[in-house]
Image (tube, rainbow, N blue to C red):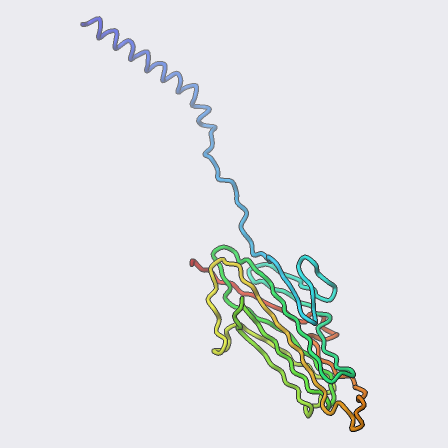
Length: 241
């Protein structure tokens, strides 16, 4: 019995000695081992997914831009875009009436945990007319399919103006008539900007039925001195759902 106990103690002491020796050899390696690091993930930034301009007065896209339609983007905490619409003009000339339209759509991907809080549009419509022309312009601001702001300008024949500018500032949801819709958190959204320019000349035909030579009567978005027809600013807020 005594020999059996001595044998057990001898085996235990030998096992402890081997564990101690192994610990001595492994200690330097353990000291140099660094905890596993999570790979750095680049933060997801605001993105312009796509844009499109179409209508009788414009035609371009992100895939096929043109010189007439230019959109310069600035990405940051606030999205900004300067839009040039070089051909968006209605010139009556010798025509009795006319119509020119352009619809612009910009698809944005907000950063995760943010959504659109407000959209502000700054634009201008310029008219050059005499007392024979009746011009109307309509500018609409949309979020998705929802109309959030609008501006109508009506220049009647008696509103004679050789050259006149109409400055337009639209802010989404600023009117109770067009409330701001609730935007999805982190979901892509489409910013819409619609222009419609229409005109008609009064007393177009002479009594003998012959067409009257038309003076210079035109209506355009933006001016020749200002290449940026529109400026858009999109503001974001934090969200959780």
